[in-house]
Length: 227
Image: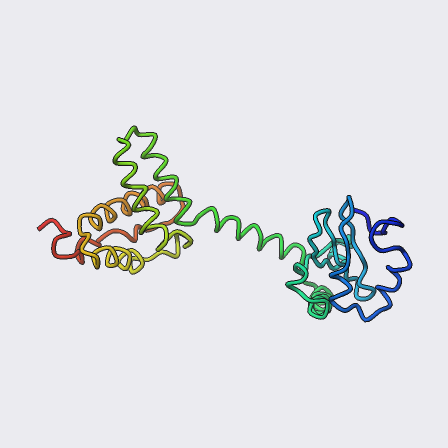
């Protein structure tokens, strides 16, 4: 990545000096133009930089020294979502935490990994894996179409974004109650069975420890049970 600007492309070196010496209003950063290669422009203080990508996207980065003595870059958010004033405040807070011994770069990497793991263990991910097994097992197209309809219409909107360990029986009960509320008792019965299968597979894969879709027959609607 280029840290210095090429003369004749966007701001000149003189303009860069002006940018560092000026009040650094948001309008100044908004005027930074993209170049063929991504580059950093110094804020002028606090080891804070704005990064401009080749496509013109801008983000804030803070130059910091990690515990082992190596210099690294810490992302502080995108511009203009994070203003110049707020970016400087973030940089000041980051510097204080680093001085107290906190490795913010490692902390951010750990948090990112945790988010990636959580995203891979959502109900939606498991539901698609369960549906794929249905396809591979040779189920009739009409059956697969019916499952797909109710996955997209009822099940995924209610549970899709939730991590599997965070789904409890009350979530499944509320989903079935919403289906029964439109007198679709046969659909509710099928969905109850599908949920039990889905969570059983998730347990086998280590995605969760309990099946929150169990015991729901006890509260099924009048025509949704076995009699």
